[in-house]
Length: 195
Ligand code: UP5
Ligand code: MG
Image (cartoon, rainbow, N blue to C red; front, top):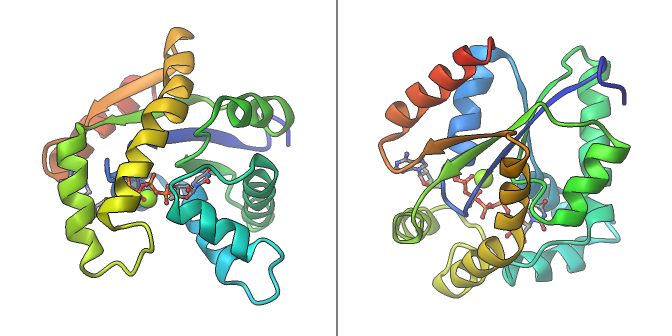
């Protein structure tokens, strides 16, 4: 891809910070294509004949980061399909969550415009995820997996946010208030960037 072909905003934040919820609103109002790396991995896991099904399943249950090659390929395929059908503005949700992924994606796919980071304390995220777990059917919405996801987020994914932040490329949003309130801050930050 070239910069003229795709605009990418990374959407990061801990498990349950509200990435998917806010992306859905942005799709409605701004026409972005929302690509959740986690959703793409879950789809691939369930695709009959996938050679990665078992691998993805065990990584997700353990809250570990699936090897980058798999995720980047899924993202590239989805981006290509969207560009071909006329939408080249992307919210890439839940990726990159490891330094090597961040570097590889920006070097080999396309540099991001900036990162939208949802900042939320663990106790709030834990409550949200346990609540969602009553109905989500997600294999990682149980307390054991949630603790592992939190640990991976702190040890592996926060360094990515810190790296982009040091480059002045992070828009940080407090994500504790109700979804509509959080979204107002997102819209204000987009407006201040001329979006
Ligand atoms: N909710 C949302 N916002 C709220 C608010 N402001 N106030 C009150 N409640 C709010 O929201 C979570 C829940 O909270 C929902 O019930 C919602 O209604 C409520 P959601 O918007 O779904 O939050 P989100 O941040 O998207 O949480 P999610 O669980 O999707 O985050 P994760 O980052 O844990 O999950 P993801 O799907 O991105 O990744 C899952 C796994 O896939 C990873 O652990 C990893 O194993 C694997 N993965 C990779 O290996 N590589 C990747 O690149 C990506 C994923
Ligand atoms: Mg999500």
